[in-house]
Amino acid sequence: MAAQISGSEAVYAVDYRGISVPQAAELRTKLRDADATFRVVKNTLGERAADKAGAEGLKELLDGPTAMPFVRGAAAAAAKALRDFRRSTGGTLLEFKGGWMNGAGLSPEEIDAIAQLPAREVLEARLVGMVAAPLT
Image (cartoon, rainbow, N blue to C red; front, side, top):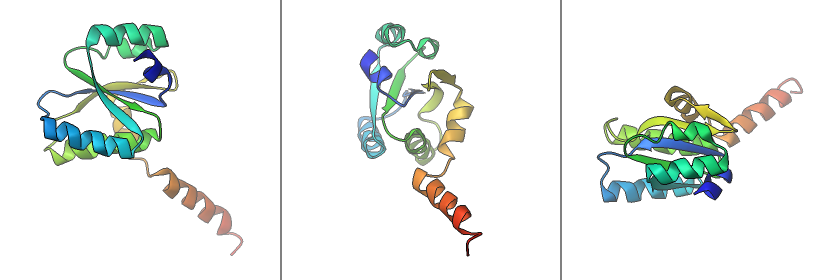
């Protein structure tokens, strides 16, 4: 688990209470498309892995039932997948506890803000459009 934390672009902590097995399978599929894995974490092992990976900010999030999506791809795509899943279930499942990205902790509000970012391709297209606009 420490290697997963170290090798991830971002790690989110969510409360998985109330999620059914078919819902978890659906969520794993959506996260796999975003190059992320969803793993239920035992708190004591998560604390040890966070210590080993140097991510002390994750330790405080490990309270109660916790699952961690380990994001290797775009952090925004995984956050969107989690947010969209939460919305599709009525907003009661998968509450964000926080996260860890670029050596710093993330609050639930910051993860929601990341989820609202457009996809990387959209941002690149906007940049190209802005650069090309004066030329035309």
